[in-house]
Image 1 (cartoon, rainbow, N blue to C red):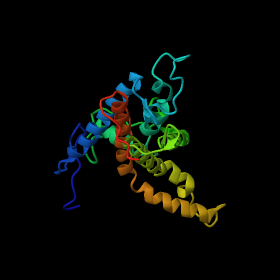
Image 2 (image 1 turned 60 degrees about the horizontal axis):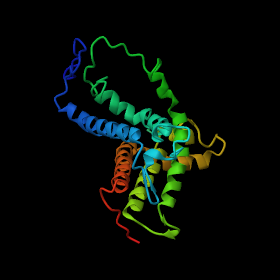
Image 3 (image 1 turned 135 degrees about the vertical axis):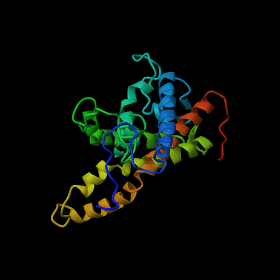
Image 4 (image 1 turned 90 degrees about the vertical axis):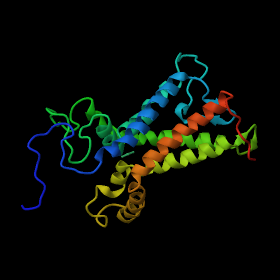
Length: 252
Ligand code: FES
């Protein structure tokens, strides 16, 4: 057809007919995901400066055996698999890191490394991606603990109080909650899998829930990045206060 783009004769890494700077999209994912991965790994293994006063780092919640009675390593390592599994199997993050780190493919209509045979997510280790829905259930349990931590962050020695750390933790749990409830799996469970709401049990309430979740789901990418930043910053803030590098400002 006249005027339509012609296909490239071969597929090789980076081969494309695109004229825009498609590679710019990769940079935020490389910088943010790479930086967060490095920081979170170091913090998870550090095993120190994770609590101060009423504050507990989200990387260490729920806090298990902090006195090292039976677990000799960092308590964060006991719970890491939950939040890590949820983020790593997230549909949006999969797209981001497949492109940024595996170049598979680097972008839409851009060639991937030659001789790659596409197998979907049908073989180990990528078949694990299909467990995302179960990681979502686990994420709800983690959210409950994190909300509990935030309630405790308003309790200064038995008295109601608010510090900068309280506000940081509150903002973080709100962003984490919005991110979790914008999950594609939840939207599917609520109603995305239905062909006919009026024919289904509890069809109308499910339709309402599906519509509300769709509003969040449309913002899933933005919530994924925002919540990644807030959870990393919350841990960083508590580490700074706990190590004595900065003082927590008491507002009330
Ligand atoms: S799809 Fe991203 S958290 Fe479920």
